[in-house]
Image 1 (cartoon, rainbow, N blue to C red):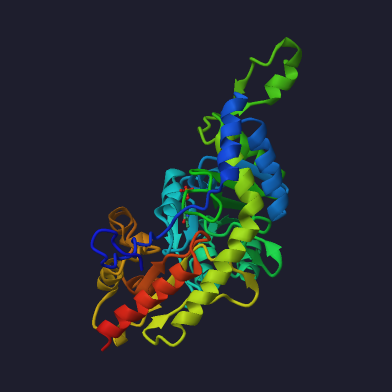
Image 2: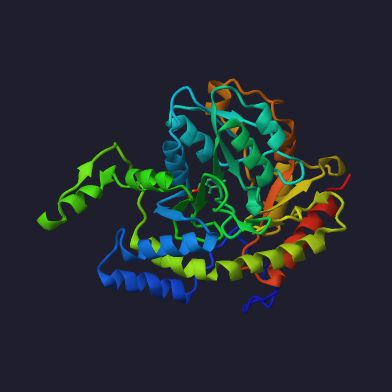
Length: 396
Ligand SMILES: *Cc1c(COP(=O)(O)O)cnc(C)c1O
């Protein structure tokens, strides 16, 4: 603890934010260099970022975009999802997943999660399949890959397009295979809080050339470059719009940041794993708290550290627990408010409380604690001590 220079009294520590991006002088220099280069929008740095990202995750193609939401939308479009179709996803995800399904005119169908990792339960997915089901959107919750063997087998058996939401899972692996190389299309997020950040940004990876080609086309107004080739001798001003595309492209400023972050990703993820293990060790004898655990066959990248409270052992609920942590200077979050609790989905799609008991029970208990590479060991110890202190003060 530091002390006040005037009074000599100890001053409280500054609050520990829930998240802080890990940006070094190297990222700053890369962005400044891009500004000086005169090329700000999609250009050489985006091309290089796509190449290096594809190589890193072992995918044949990578298309850089301005968010994971855009990548998910492009994946649905490339899969040909439209009105009358159903897409199965998890209730324990960010609203963007369900929103893009609705934007394509399709119906979001939810399947419950597994109690161990809060990822989509493959058995529940299979139960929700109807003749209208066209795709599954699986989210690698907190940075822990889903049970991909089972999901890939279901997709193959029923002829479904498998989209992975890897917003939390840059650098994660399943049975030694990198996330981004497995399903039909994978969406990554480079939002400010994610393991790799470009401020805002995303990437779609795929091994399927027709998916990459369609995504590339729809990323920039549906403008075809083939026309350029045909008219190359006449100048590069000519283009043809062959579909009503979107404006989802990434800028070179973002890619410059992303290239540095990508080179640092393995180190940053390793640091997350060390801090997560330290936090788990500190909480291991705290019976009112269930710490998260990694399944043995995965490489977890610890985007989130989500504890579950054993509320039956406490006199306070999760909301009060969060308030108590805030009073002790610890920032937290909740991932996620279930999709079917939001008014739009609750009222428009006939979902009811009780439909997804595992996700609903988890929602009452989950708290995401601070965990990011820029934290010190002392920060982690402080988080654990605050959690233990709240439990001590409010135990039944
Ligand atoms: C952050 C997040 C998204 C959206 O990412 P953006 O890049 O902000 O569009 C989608 N899904 C999940 C699970 C996320 O956590």
